[in-house]
Amino acid sequence: MSRKPIIAANWKMNVTPSEAVTYLDTFLSTFSQPVNVDIVIGASFVTLPKAAELIGPNPAVDLAAQNMSHEANGAFTGETSAAMLNDVGVDYVILGHSERRSLYGEDDAVINKKVHATLAAGMKPILCIGESLEEREGGQLESVLTSQLEGSLAGISADQMADIVIAYEPVWAIGTGVTASKEQAQETQAFVRSVLEKIFGSDVAGATRIQYGGSVKPGNAEELINQPDIDGFLVGGAALDPNSFAEIVGAGIGG
Ligand code: PGA
Image (cartoon, rainbow, N blue to C red; front, top):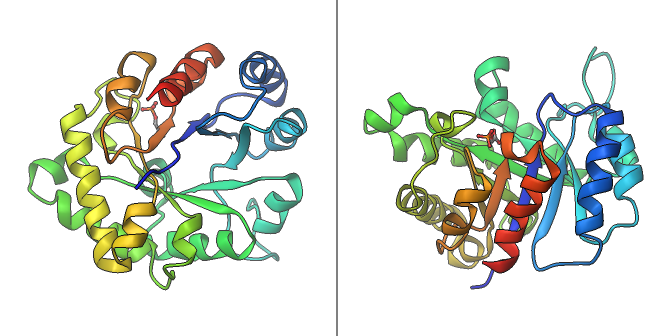
């Protein structure tokens, strides 16, 4: 089954609104026409409105938030709702990133609520999963990924899966410069797809896009995207430079 690659920049807590202007001037001039890859820019809450304004008419590039509250509104100081993101023109929401899980205590139950709230608001979750090095070395890789998928996707229907992207990001590869080998990434992503098949059936599993994330850079993007179960990337550090991110997207277009 052919799946359109989706390559997303995760700027994390980088790129101010003013810096986004410089970045997107460069990046959007390279991608002003639709391409055979869905391109996504994941900006901080305060940078989203400026990024939305700049991306506005661009047919190739969509916008992602990096987190969201599962609550609709009310007394939740410091939180940001689905309606707020919608109002700004956000298309995707990155959910359950390992930094949210490990630094801010998000578990699968809360991530599951966020997945439901994102879909209910007409936006698309990019759901992150991934194991730590201890878990991989301790033989828990499969059980960790299975319970993250089952927990985060509880109550999600097969139809709703059409709007969900999975990002497999081994925690030991995030921001470390250590990338999973193409064989490791392929093998693990095939396993992730097999779990989706058990939960949702083979049609959904075959259609779901699974990104790889963790030290993706221009030098390794091509060999990774050529793996049959790698359908794109979630890119942190190497997406902070518009030319480097453009090269990674270029590998997807050529792949
Ligand atoms: P990295 O981050 O590309 O800097 O490893 C990826 C991510 O955390 O999404």
